[in-house]
Image 1 (tube, rainbow, N blue to C red):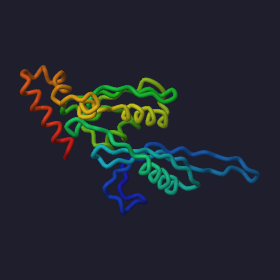
Image 2 (cartoon, rainbow, N blue to C red):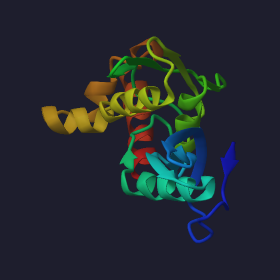
Image 3 (cartoon, rainbow, N blue to C red):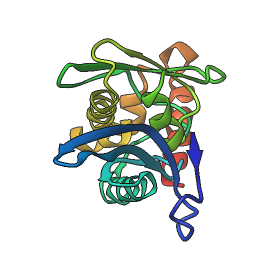
Image 4 (cartoon, rainbow, N blue to C red):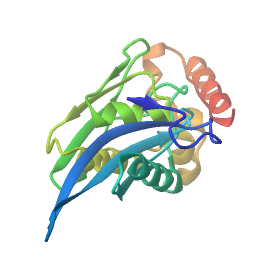
Amino acid sequence: MARNDYGDRGDSEFVDKLVHINRVAKVVKGGRRFAFAALVVVGDQKGRVGFGHGKAREVPEAIRKATETAKKSMIRVPLREGRTLHHDITGRHGAGKVLLRAAPPGTGIIAGGPMRAVFECIGVQDVVTKSQGSSNPYNMIRATFEALKSQVSPRIVAAKRGKKVAEIIGRRTRSLGSETEAAEAAEALTETADA
């Protein structure tokens, strides 16, 4: 359920997706008082994403609060060729456990429910995911974010080890053939990362 103009008309650069709405009741002397809790994922479809949780007496207000929280808690995720993850990762939060795998071009987003919203907001085009634990949307989203935070690009690894990107990425592209092809692939990756 995508919403671009629901409450935030100024920030058109962000895409926000409503993942879950929960209605809670507080029993008081005169009966029940209902409130709503919303879980929203926000992203710029260029590698930045965040999630937020908001509670209010009305649904639109809860969504607005969740969207504001999501924009404050955004993280940057390095993407390979701007379309998929650099490597396979697992993430855990509470009983939620998720497995995220990089995928070849044309695969699409193979993810269910809350995880699909996260990848659509990041701007990932090819990824395969599997939820192996709790199906609670809050735990699934948090586990997905834990996994995405541990995602590292070859450039970061090369900088830490004091090596060239071609040396790091050489293993991945060795199946392509020669070392020059590996170096070309590394240069292309560096150019797309800088852009």
